[in-house]
Image 1 (cartoon, helix red, strand yellow):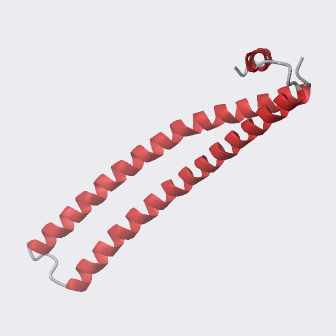
Image 2 (cartoon, rainbow, N blue to C red):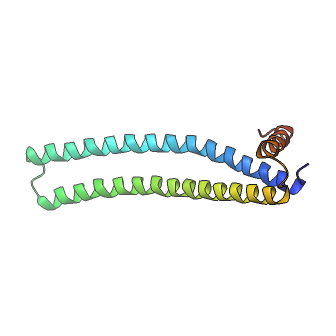
Image 3 (tube, rainbow, N blue to C red):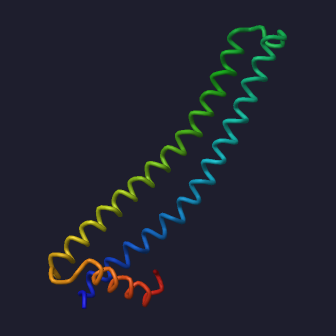
Length: 132
């Protein structure tokens, strides 16, 4: 039987994995919203171009200000998504490292057990904890 400490660590890693998986779905929604926002910004740019071409905006400073506002808003939206993606990647990297460390520790403690036996024991524990 694998030590309870290792099983608890495995359960925590599994919970973190489930949380990340749930968050990925949220990030998909955020990315979809960004795509929609960019589409709106493109329409804003097209409208600005039409206004310039039809001389509704003849002052270059006004055109420049409107263009800068569109660009800044787009950059702000993209930075929000980048930050969230960076956080997700960091969590995934940490989780992968934790999993490798746990595997190494278990394997060092139980060198006589096969990977399949270790995996089965951990999976059985996760089922008991209702987090499989």
